[in-house]
Every structure is written in structure tokens, then in C-alpha cells.
Image (cartoon, rainbow, N blue to C red; front, side, top):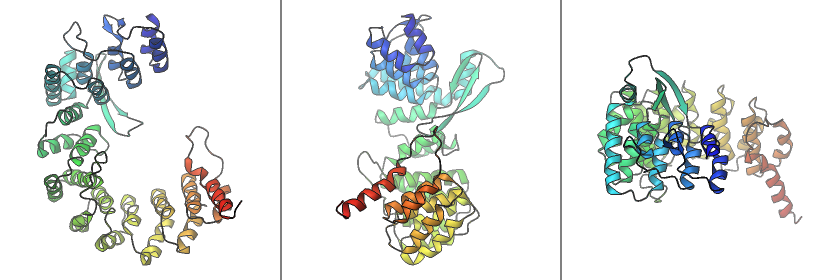
Length: 404
């Protein structure tokens, strides 16, 4: 049992799994609490998942009246709360009501107030930014007196309400996102995801109307919501707004904030209306590279290709890479597209060179073979890029076509 406790403490999920398969008890105690609580306190999702799979109970009542699930809520752990709830489906009604009440209470109090309540301390709080490498969103982690809390409580409440069929009012969800005004914060992301899956006319109209708000953060949220609604509910295969990006043209024409404009353009790229292309091309020389990078995706007519290709020589590498990606999947046979990709195989940035070579191969352009050598040595620490196989695939296609 000591081995299991030690493996949990050092975050060794593989060892935890091995020990459990060898007969270790998933409810082993450490300092009077099941080891699952250690994983919760450490925000260690892999170890927690291993313990759950091994039989640990997230609803086990602890001496202080809490459960591992409630402790995950208290600590502001969105990922662990969701994992524990999914592990116990359906959750007994009393536990569900207790869980929702707990999440609502912690969300209303806020992470800092919750931390000071737990510790009873008034000193300075250590704050760090924690990024989820897999999903890409972030949260703020607050520590005081050896106790740690994350500011994910509003996201926890939102996902629990959705899971249990509670349709939270639109304005309330907007307020939650605005409380964390960053497109990559977990609360903002979860609100956008939640409203984006509603795919109803009412949510579309309210989101579009929010574009008239004088505050740029509200307009940014509106643009993000509209983008999410256009993507639709992938799980259910519902995309009722896929061809309605044209409705956003008036706002894109007058929006001055570059981040809001970039998200609006992104949302509009999933509609082929001619007025969208006109809006995109009008921003060809926009001072913000985030906006210029979206211009190619608004273009649907071959006669605009030459204009777009000027961005392949843009001073910003992000814009050049965006153009490269667009050209790599451009279905037209215009020789200018291939020539631009060849030029990009000489780019100073290796990811762009990889993209350009892949694009040539995808277009069955024989120049990809010679250009492949310009990619250069790869960083062995980076994950393998599947696009590096595209020239090989091109050569196999040629051999098959030649009867080889």
C-alpha cells in the first residue's frame, strides 16, 4: 500500500495502474484520506483516471463530510469534476443537488474568496498561469498558506448545469465569460462551447445583437459565439448556421478592434457569399497580422488569387503560414498557386517549408521532390509531423499511375 501512496504522490500514473492491476486497493488511505484525494489536491488527471478505472469511488464520504468529487469542485478543477461526474452516470439525485449547490456557492464566491475562507489568512496570494497542453486553455492558480485553488468554478458550474439539463439564461452565461475576458480562459471557452451547442435561432439572434455592444470584450464574445454557432454541434451533426456568415458583413465592415474583426472574418469564411470575399479583400493591408491571415479564407473566386498571393510575401510569418495552408488545399489548377508554394519552400521558418512542400505534393506538383530537401534537419524533440510523408505518398501515386 505504501508503494501506491508513493506512486500517487509522485504522479506516476503508469505505476499506479500497474499496482492496482496487481491487487493494490484503490481506496488506500494516506493521512486518513483515500489516495484519490491526493490526486485531486495535485490536479493530477492521469493519476485520478487510473484510480477511477481501478475502482476508486469519487462519492466516498470523508470524515469532514466532503467527497473527492466535492473536493474537486472546491479546488476549482474543471477537468477532474467532469471526469468524476462522467464516471458516475447517472449521479444519485441527492448527490447531484449537493454538487450543483456546491458549485454554485463556490462560483458566486470566487476563487480568491474561497481560498481565504479555507485558510483564514489575509496575506498575499501566489498566482500562476496554468495552461492545459492538450486543450490549450488556461486558468489562474492561487496558493495561500499551502492551499491551492484554481479559478475554474464558473466553468464547473456551467458544465454541470448543461449535463443536468439546466438551461442557464444567455445573459448569465455572458456575464460568466466576461468575468474572465480572454478567449483562451477555461471559463470563456466553456461558455462559448455551451452556447454554441444550442444551435437555436434565439441564441444566434442574441449573439448577433451583442455585436452592437459598446464594449469590445462583449463584441469579442459575440464574435466567438457566432463562430461557435456556425461550427454547430458536431456531436449531433447540426449546423443550421453554416451558410449564414453573410449576415455578419455589416459588423465586419465597421469593426475597428482587430481581434474582434479577426474572429468575425473567421466566422464568415464558412459562407461563400460574394460580399464576404469583398470584405476580406478590403483588409488585405490591414495593420494587424491576425486580420491579414484570415483574408485568403474569404476568397472563393480564381480572379482574386493574384491579389491574395501578395500575402505569401508578408513580413509576418503567421500570415505567410496561413497563406501556405490555404494554398496547400486550394483546389484550383492555376500555376501561380504552385509557384507561390515553391517560393515558400525557401522560407526562413521550417514549419512553413514543411507546409509548402506538403502543399506541392498534395497538388501533385513534381517540384515537391526537389523541394523536400530544403526542409532541413528536424528537431528530434518535436513530435513527428505527418505532412513529412506527403512527398512519399505523391511518389507512390505516380508509381501506381505509371503502372509500377
